[in-house]
Length: 537
Ligand code: NAD
Image 1 (tube, protein in one colour):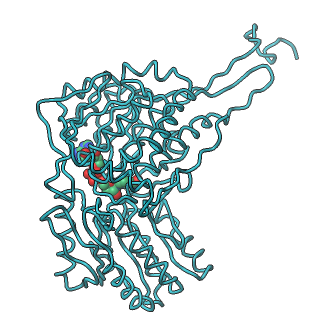
Image 2 (tube, helix red, strand yellow):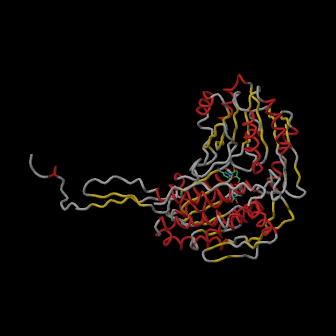
Image 3 (cartoon, helix red, strand yellow):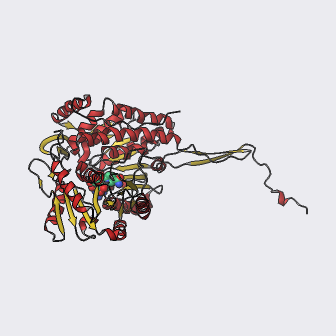
């Protein structure tokens, strides 16, 4: 039996370290070449006449890759390739499928590490640390832990009375899975097709147009690890066009989605409308947005709170679904916290992430930049808001915005309610005596992905965690609300933040299995009559 996996150690990239030198070499290599990314459909690498270019978010002038755009017939071919690959793939023993992903993890942790890290840094504007915890460690963890969970999924078996044997068998879903992935995590993008594939499903994978480069390298990694052609088919193109073709197929069996709630809801609705044509009830797993809170109790440790807010709100430019984006702070703590936040933010460098002094890179693209700038503008002009730090931005070289803290007077203001997905932390200052009202405000949100409570008073900590039971699928006590680790904090939110199927755990894997229950009777009855039917008194 396979031993339990360990989390991939996070390398530090300190000056003089071998990983720092290796990453620099790979960054230079990838910055100097334009990759022609193909679609991967069955055995084919496909290019089309129509295409698009990928540029580094932090340097408009740097073209990293070009890629094709799928035509309807390409999508239909991908669906057919998935269907063709299904029988052989589904028939493999689980251990044989698991080993391919375990091999992918070893390749990723070893010779492929800097390839994936550099592609994620350049294509998605991540700093070395952000790329390392995502593209190298989290993706390797997904592969290793899921392989391990998958082999244990059917350990729990039904009982068998004397004379018969009962058992459950794992089978994949009744049709192929459509994986639609977000830009912000290479690991999530890799896991959404990989988790269903691990369990014997075949997949059509549509990556985010904003993360095509890293998706391409993940696809190549899986091929190198031995994933047979057609098991995962990478289709790049217009989301509407690809989705329309995929959902037309009678063989559609499930959706594995991560992204914004509005897109998730529209997909769910379209699947519901397609029910008359499907051969099964498609499984729908979707993780969506957050408006993640940090609630500080008056007993909170000021330094711990400051670090959690800075890291939680600004790492990866606030573009994590789990990013701290609303803080509730007692009046007694606020003046000192405000001062500490200003001081730390003054030290944060925003810039090209390949310059290792940067703490923040650029936001992902023009639409994100404009959205964040509009929120900064709102904060600067709304009489009920006060910009405490930051507020600026520049699109001259790349899509840069400054880490920004805003004190917001109205607790139901848009800045405290809507996901911004950028480096803006909105703070509501509550009167210490009105803690209960602050807790009610935290809890009334529709999004319930992550949250954090800071308190040194243990009784208060327990009480607040109990009161906020429904407010987050992942709750952190005296820690930042970001940074879930596979195998340690299974991830997913409630309410409108998603179906909460807990990526990185056996819970998620159960969604990609359609078990068969089998009973064998050893000596079959040969008389149809039950004893009560025998004539007599
Ligand atoms: P997005 O919703 O814009 O895009 C996600 C995917 O959906 C992309 O592949 C995109 O091309 C596709 N898409 C867009 N429009 C579509 C349509 N009409 N039909 C079908 N597909 C469509 O999200 P994003 O900007 O890539 O990612 C950020 C969002 O994802 C945020 O809301 C964030 O909170 C969320 N997110 C959630 C989690 C989680 O685990 N809960 C993790 C990461 C990101």
